[in-house]
Structure formats: structure tokens, C-alpha cells
Image 1 (cartoon, rainbow, N blue to C red):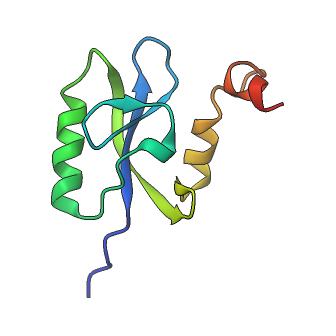
Image 2 (cartoon, rainbow, N blue to C red; image 1 turned 45 degrees about the horizontal axis):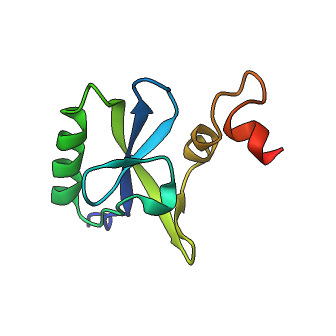
Length: 100
């Protein structure tokens, strides 16, 4: 018996700034996970990921990240994704400084 497909989003790093970005339903990119397209089936996920990979001038390292659905929209399902969303960990700057 196969496992049910878990919701995912396409994520990558912005080519110029390096921070985490998410693909929206229109194919644009956002830095806000709440605006990301939540993908609920494998064929759509494969299609969206292929489209993201074909944008090397915008995004690098695109992949599918599992999310949990909450009242506030998608949330990271794994620690790695929650950690990535806070930005670089060498010192507080950018997103981390804004949250401190």
C-alpha cells in the first residue's frame, strides 16, 4: 500500500539575495510561505518543480518541501525548513534581527 501524498511547496534560494523563496500559484516567487502554492498531488508537484528549475536567473536549488496545513496557511513540516526560513545562522541580521 502506498503512502498518501503529503502537501508540498516549491522552495529555492533567491539567486541575488540568497534568502528562501517560495513559488506561488501564478509561478511568481515570494518570501512569504503563506503565499506559496500548496501542491496536493504528485503530477502537479513534478510540473511546478520543473518550471522552477528552468528559472536559473531567479532561483537556485529548487526542490519540494513538505508542509503542514494550519489555520494560518502552510507551515514547515520539518525543522530544516523552519530553520531555512529564518535566514543565515552565523549572526543576527535580516529576518533574524527583525524577530529579535
